[in-house]
Length: 220
Ligand code: CA
View 1 (tube, rainbow, N blue to C red):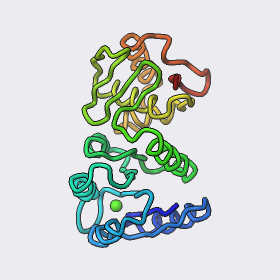
View 2: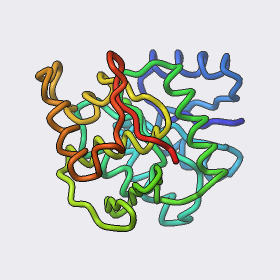
View 3: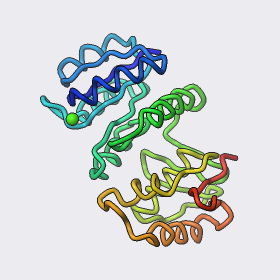
View 4: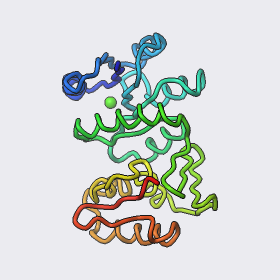
């Protein structure tokens, strides 16, 4: 598997290149939008890891260019700053396959890469499904048994993360980071309040509590 890493932070780029190589990927690393354009056009990469803030432009502009040229082009995982919820949502709207908020553990990134590649192989769609729950990441429409459900932006972020990792327990801290990106340590009840609202809207049985760990939505 060949990865194209677009990241201007020298320390992060170097450590990612090393860790991902050790995980069995061939990694080409560039630091500027201009260099990334040339590499991506070669069409020899299986997936792109894309930083947003780059010295000569925005990774989101690059993503927009690729998706305009070819909607089914390369799988892209955005590496986003922790506090930029707009960038993440904007990135998904533009057709990013996933995003990983910084800072992240390399093991988590590797599992995301595998998940995206699996998903691309299985269903190359903007509609993610977990049982009766469907999320259209392009339009941000959520349905349960084909019935539309109205969610607040934070509730949507919560559901998106659970569905993205359907069948796996998502740890509380991970959900807190996704739902409250601008808060260092959210109130201990804040996540539970949102879980409560989402259960009410989706059906209480759909979101399982795994005591002491986190929450999970069934894949089937
Ligand atoms: Ca950067």
